[in-house]
Length: 423
Image 1 (cartoon, rainbow, N blue to C red):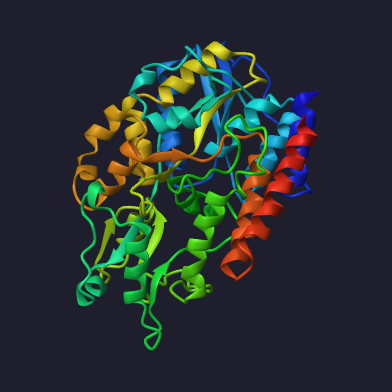
Image 2 (spheres, rainbow, N blue to C red):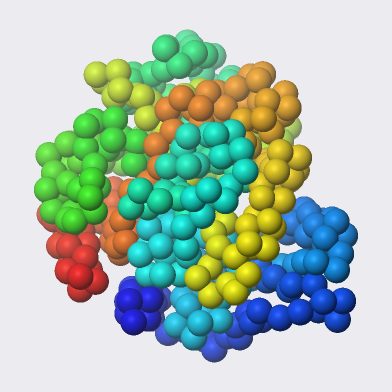
């Protein structure tokens, strides 16, 4: 009953109306007598690599285990999550479920995934943030092949012309005040050049890229035990952090209606963007760019966001042992390296990361340093879908000039109401 109730609420809060969709195969045997396993993953850059990995797995386990992976088009921001939720209500989940990091707590509490403590091989080899992300209520539920972060990309020539030298070490990372002053100096309204670009949307990006500003300022989004948001997401430290960010948009240092390639086209001197952006920038050879650290608090506290897609074993599987075998195969050192390379992201296994030597050199070493030393996962709460959505809307309004305290008070109220409903 808990699974149906919790998931039903998530459906309403995420999008409301779901299209009918089929479920996964129940536990069955292939013609050769092998145990059949199913996996779901969003369609994306790693699809071909996953196909190769599953093909090799089936070859190595012929007659014993046969896996089939299905890629779900995302269509809209929550289409994949909606399919997971619909399958959960009808007990037709696949054996292995891929999910975005912040959904772990919600899925674990709703009974969609089950603990995997003691099942993950070489667990100590994973970066700390990926284990933290996959842990709920003291139990490990998921692991992932890749990590991510947000850093400050910059136009080399623009900074040189302005006499600005970006930091090259973590110890020298700019404070928010230093970053703000650089953005002011680099903004040229006559030429239509903004000091910094940051993407504005109602999706997951908002809480992901602004989270470190709140955390490094001593704030948080929700109580440590997940019991309430009031006094946290709308607490004085969070409000102070968002008021600081609001200055960038109020003073015209950030474009509220940026083009998709504003930074690449030389219309923004800097860009706060995800670690995956470095690959896209290679398609713009005329733009010389570099990467420096996510700004730290004015008191010197350094935090960077983290979290990525990961795998859990569903509660509907009738073959947990075989599912664990498949999970460990996907997560072995070589396959993690393949997936990280295909996705242009940091590897979540240290042994895999060590073999990806390009991440030891500038500018990618900045991203690696953050993943290993300043990573902070998003809040672990069963009401995360509400928190992320409502916070994203609030920050949009804040950047447009709304009162910070009033907007965050609304978020706290919505989240606490959701927590109360689930109780």
